[in-house]
Length: 302
Image 1 (cartoon, rainbow, N blue to C red):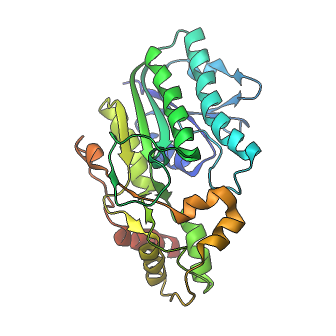
Image 2: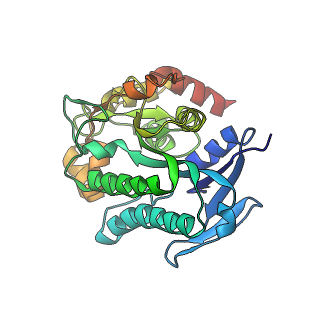
């Protein structure tokens, strides 16, 4: 039987690469990328409004993961613009080309983030029905999801996935958290009471596959069941690599001075519910952080 074709944007990201590894035995994978390096790579250039339309021939599913990282440096006016435009303009280019080629998709799956609810520390546990926040990240997510909604014109299902902090021992947030602890400079950030709604990268990939296989439209929080505070995560990371936390908490004012407005990523966070995702029949492999860390870090050591 002929395999469905899945087109993935954000080809160089850790999530795109791991997702392709998971899907490749059952689907034909294509990537949209600025620099073609492999036979299944196709070029696009958002600034020039160029997309190789051969990438769209026969495509049944698009997983839209493209976007400048929110965690790289300070949020200058230029960086804010890049963060928004890399997500919105890329989606608009895709939609324009799909319409021009009269291509109908089975599904369009777009990344979003739990930042939709606002980057703040509260006692709330946010479900998908909660309203959006009033800060920069919530505005990014709102525009991101509005851009995805436009794909109802060309796709049977549109799915918006609000990711938590995606953890992988190979790259991304987790190695950055581990490095100072490994060197003996680990410390809790600010009050340490801010929640980190984390999720294992493999569970993210599995849930994307789950949405494709089960034709799941709508919006889903993709986070582990047991969110942890910054303090809990810091001490658990230290425990898993047999280190101690000796330093006092790093004051919030110092983090704000270094990172500017982007410091909210480190200093704020609330709990987020994954009940809706679980109600679809999906089972998270990693519900709590400690088993995930032990497995990931053991794999790295081997």
